[in-house]
Image (cartoon, rainbow, N blue to C red; front, side, top):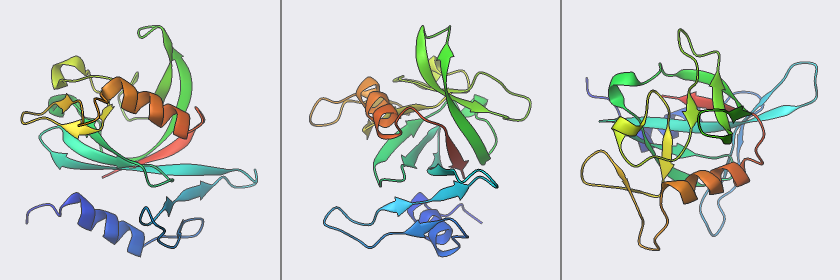
Amino acid sequence: MPEKPWHQRLLDYLAGLHAGQALESAGADGPKITASIPLSGTGYVMPMVLMFRSGGGMGSLITPGGTSYVTLENEALQFPAGEYQVNWEASPRLGRHTFRLVSVPFRSGILIHPANWPHELEGCVALGYAAGAAPSLIRDASGRGSRDAVMAFEEEMCRDSFILKVS
């Protein structure tokens, strides 16, 4: 059976929300997703970011505030679907702080960073605003590229830890 399109998977996921997750009412900009995971005994609620793979290394990512990004991965080096904690950490390789997935089975060093082509990614995830004809990220109509998308995502997530749910 073919995989459901990402938007149907999102609707299925939202239909099955569990404690600590909610869907706010639709506003002028559409519905806002406020998924979160309460951390037992801490009083802290970690936000959840949803990532949907659509094949060919392309996909989409939706933040708790409802912002949507195009994702790019090297399909041959993708990490397994699942839920992962993502921390804001220093990356000696990139020479800056970035988001790093932790506790990925048999893998380490998986980052969220700018890239335009799958061969620029060694298991990491790149964000963008628009997809090219081939598996690639291109600038959108206003000229924003992958670096702009990653910077906006980092700012929106307050450079703080979150849960990434990948399907």
